[in-house]
Image (cartoon, rainbow, N blue to C red; front, side, top):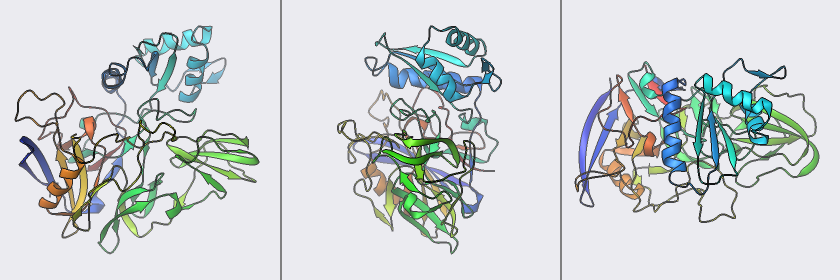
Length: 409
């Protein structure tokens, strides 16, 4: 039984609507990816234009935002998202590139967005696993994990836009590895719930060798080894000799010998005691106490000498910067609770909310009775749907497509 209520808080002279949804069992949650539709692709283009290019027009040239039909081929070889990206970025005036652009446009799979840098062009490939939560057939649906979104997220040839990252565990099986050593919410078989930092060092990977991840490495060193590039649970490339780009949404393992090939699976173990686990944004409550600051490192544009890496940059003031939030946590009885803090981008009156700071969020969650809690993917993606309907309003002009969701059927 899902129990939803709306609570209104008054913080810093702003009225902040909050939705709290109490759930019964952690085992009811499932990880799913909404499917891409024409409407979702159009919405993605609108978000990219509004949130990226129009805000920072001096950074962008011509962007080819595209999705890939399954049957396209050039010169006898089937095109993938990555091979199409290489073709579009290498020579947009070639016969093959012009044919590809024309074909993608005819199939409603291309959106061209132009910034101010006239001599620069970039291809932005999106996966088919990015769509609307409202298209899902579920009693409850909520956006969950961070995902690759912009050019900084996808600065390697292996990264594709719309790829979720961060730990996902269901019934002891690791569906997605914990790329970054950040707080994860873990529900154990004995019923307890903990929040602790979790990284690749805390699990076992079926491929053995030397591990290279962001932010420590942008490329592997030159060496006489095989570099195995992994995103999610799949090998995407195998190269010899080093100097291999490390993907933002994955990692590289260097090994003396390997029989692996692109497309082969990679298996994970080590969290068999966890019936449910998720890792996205920072923790807000640990052991009943509000978290007073960031506990993990996040990329900042003010420190450009660091290797850029996701998830979510958070170049914000922990105590002051307000935004919409989505939180998953546990109450005193260790039952799951979802919290959505509404936030609208352009308030017109003194009573409208722009969301809440991470500092204030911790105290709100404590007041709501949560004893463990982590942030999911908030901001413009923040929303909870019960039987296909929202109790609060999304922050942008319309619903944003997302590639990762938690649902209860």
